[in-house]
Length: 324
Image (cartoon, rainbow, N blue to C red):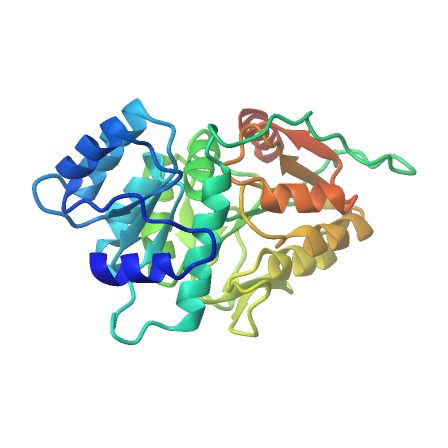
């Protein structure tokens, strides 16, 4: 696996493998002399496993870490994301026949996560909102909340959901870019960490005041008081896509809908937020400073559809007030 991954990386534009370690202990020794822009870390390793190595890396360095994980390690992968791994890639099932789509996704993640390395980042002024004609106010009566996230999302979502107090007065719908199988474990993890009920959404289920996580490899839509899952084409190269949820929720909940776009790469969610605004809803984006990757919030802000930019902590506080 090390050889296969190294060969793939060396073929990618502007990517250089600076070092290869046989296990976690050796990786930590190498990091004492040189910090690369990104560390790729297997979950399963001899001597010192991926989780223990990740903890030690995060204690000493701000280097972004991407985990390589098999579906059989999904609970461990969710724990790794909660411990500060920036993202993960699911190991290909057949290393002799790796799909081009997998390679493109892998490259995209490396490229985006590398940009988050503080040693490389250039300081910018905080983003301000484009001037809007007319003033949209936060709804006095919130009917539903929708949240979209990608890279860095799992840790951020656990942080804001675990602070919510039961019972919820409104449903919360979440789309987190994540492969099939891993979303089941992630929903269970959020449910364990929180006093409110969090579940993986099921097709045609009646909407109650719970937190619903979209399952991997499905789009989640809201139609006639029910959750409808589908496997229509990928949007922005991903399924689930935030846009599907936001657009359908906007039609159902109108000016009672609040949409949050959290950390993530790409531009998923901006078109959905445009629809939320069109139907009178309210849009909030996570700020650059607290985002692991500022792609999705930045694109939504630049599209002129965001009403407020907040830190992750402020988003958590606002969400608590809304759903009481």
